[in-house]
Length: 271
Ligand code: SF4
Image 1 (cartoon, rainbow, N blue to C red):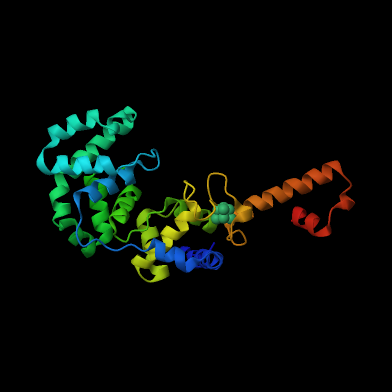
Image 2 (image 1 turned 120 degrees about the vertical axis):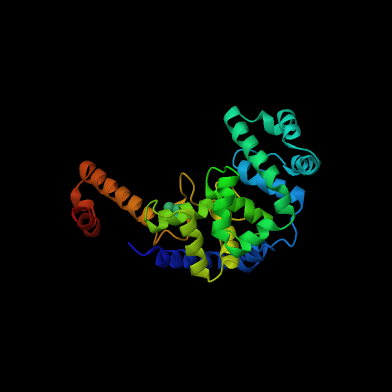
């Protein structure tokens, strides 16, 4: 098995060649994000809600974020609790609503620090340490929600779980990589995290669980390997295909005359 950095270089090359035919330059300019000079309350809450809920809800979070920004600025947690119970967010299933409410309270307590630039400084000083602190203090389930939150605010954090999972299949290295390793690998492969984050966003359009409408969805629960530009080197595809080939040959040997099998297929089967 290749080292992950070598596998990532080949994964990136395969995607680059494929995207070159699909207006790669335009896609990369679409994916670029500007680091925010100043964070507004509404964008803070909208990014947070989107990061936590986009996989389970198609709600437009803009009006809710606007209300939260106004509420958070002038009032305290008690009013947030009342507001939450009456809002659309309170209508999520209890296990989601409870966790969400706790995370919203935690963000409310930090809101001034976000709006006054304290978190921006921490992120610039040490992005991964800041992410770990955000994950813990905002009671997030995994680092991915934190990375998505920060990415939506404009900070350079790769956050495509779909790209990560496609790479794990491609590489065949199992689940040994964590978010921090992925951040590090992508940054080393491209040379800087801003470009890595834009590249990850472009890949996400092909590997995200939600169809982007920009690129075809490739590597989902049932991966569309035949359409995927990475199949020639993809460990998952190679293993699946070999199993299918063996099954086909076994089938043919059972049902038909072995002489009808090509010698190459028989040799592959016997080996
Ligand atoms: S070849 Fe299949 S399993 Fe491999 S990355 Fe592509 S879609 Fe995923």
